[in-house]
Length: 179
Ligand SMILES: [Zn+2]
Image 1 (cartoon, helix red, strand yellow):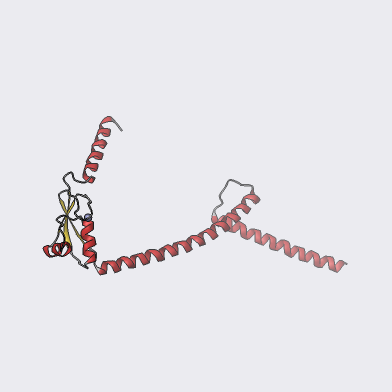
Image 2 (cartoon, rainbow, N blue to C red; image 1 turned 180 degrees about the vertical axis):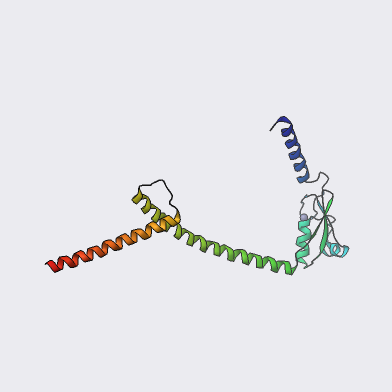
């Protein structure tokens, strides 16, 4: 990075931080004291319902959400952040159900993942045992055998041992006949 790039990056970081920091003229929430720099425009009826019997003239979005939730109010609000309007609405019962279903799915997938990890570990340990045998037999102690080659090699070992056992039986039979 040259000097000009460094200056440009520093300026970008400064701009980003300025956009993320709370606004200097933000007001504090009358209920909780939070100063987030977020404004919301609510329907008059909603505002009247959640501030009834209070002196509140300014509420943060978190308090609005909590108060709406407490009174079972599902509403839309126009949010303003740093002078820009953004749309949002509080969660409906259908949203809550959808979220609960998604959590169920996450939980199930997590379980499946754990089972698969367990199977993978068993398989991995078996592979490692086979590779250790292959390395000891071939003297290629730093090599990772190709999986298909390893399977072929293992089958050859089984066949060799089979032949050895058969030969041994034959030897025993021959010895018996002689004696
Ligand atoms: Zn608040």
